[in-house]
Length: 124
Length: 107
Image (cartoon, rainbow over all chains, first blue to last red; front, top):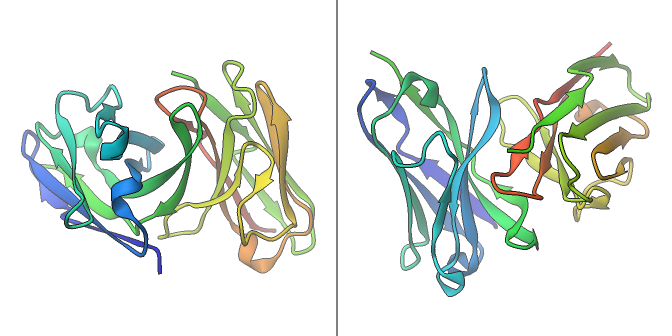
């Protein structure tokens, strides 16, 4: 069964750090372009960033609001994706989903497999 | 960034109704548009990609159309399991962006 399972969410104070993980199973993880998408009541669904497969360079891309604060990495030996979040702000409060990306057009496409999400709350 | 709008923000309908949602992009995105369904407490589910191609396993009562900046999503005969929120998403440019969603609830 194709599956993504996120973990690591929780309550953190503003300025703090948190590391999310996503464990994949049922597909060849090393070939997948992996994304993080978050959802908060105030901002709907927002793309956070992604990391390409190593065969396609393994480089990350980030949304402007998180660039410089968040880092996406992958461990293909463990079928795991990570999101290191530093300098957290109240506006980062959201459910964070990992998702695979089906490439359709010049390195972009559709999010065709999602995890169940993990909640991150940034509050003092 | 390309901004996506959807209308209506919500609608009330009955089982068997035909439901149509529209999505508009702030610039030409060709047909690089996807539609997702989300139920409360669950992750979004891909229904349609490339504006009109049905994802494998998705019932044929769902359909999409459009090109450029205007798109539509239709459920031909609403079923009980279709009450949910629907989002469009463009993939013409980074960052991929989503519409604010349309909530379909019971009339």
